[in-house]
Image 1 (cartoon, rainbow, N blue to C red):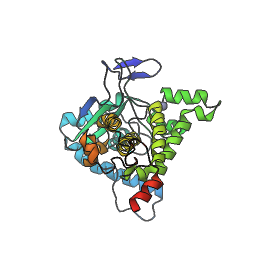
Image 2: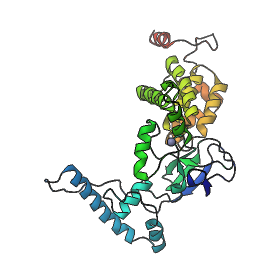
Image 3: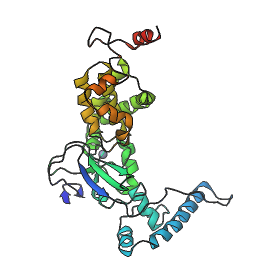
Image 4: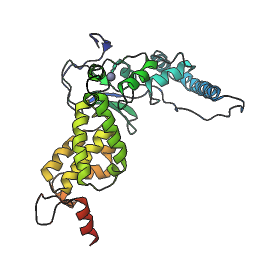
Length: 318
Ligand SMILES: [Zn+2]
């Protein structure tokens, strides 16, 4: 813990951390459902229905909390509650603060950032909450965490943080305000909206086992924007890196594929990393040559010369 000038107390790294390093591994104190369906009197307004459901969930959780070991219960109830004004009871107030239904005691000390350098993942096998460094972190650097949808605009992010009593003072938020009047395209807001647009439009293609050159070009641009914005913790980063690796496989470029695979391998915070298909692709050397995409973008007999998608399709249907 350290005092960060102009920001208050926060966690800083005591030593240099490498991208993919495990920073925290903690089992939850308490796990609960996000909501529950209960029979509600038909005369209730939507606001009353929400309030009634919260109240019922609080009652059910209270039974569980009272069965906890005294020290665990005390530790839980001592957690910060920033939802005191929205009708939540003390238990649900704390649960809402810490999200995921899992209690993250240390996470509270991580300052918010819209370009966070850590990312969480809940591991079912160990039933623990893990936090990873998503890029290299220098000794003495502040450890930061995503508290809101970092793909949205600065204005929306700040509004979303209000219930948490936070004003995000990260460099991204500050930079956008400073340059937004001059040229909208030079702002972080613009870059993030471009990324969101591309990702939404191409989302289905990221799931399909094929690549085309237009998509590869877009991914080259996307990876630049993602790294510039410090968004390695998002699923978007994983998907774009995987596609670039597949692109190298399709172009018969094994060294290139290996480079992207090395990046993919570090993404411990992304659940897709552990799927069979990705694990297969992470193998270097001969594994690429056995891949269904191997050299599909290369004209036979002409190494490295890419074919466009139309010609490729013509050939495969001929
Ligand atoms: Zn921010």
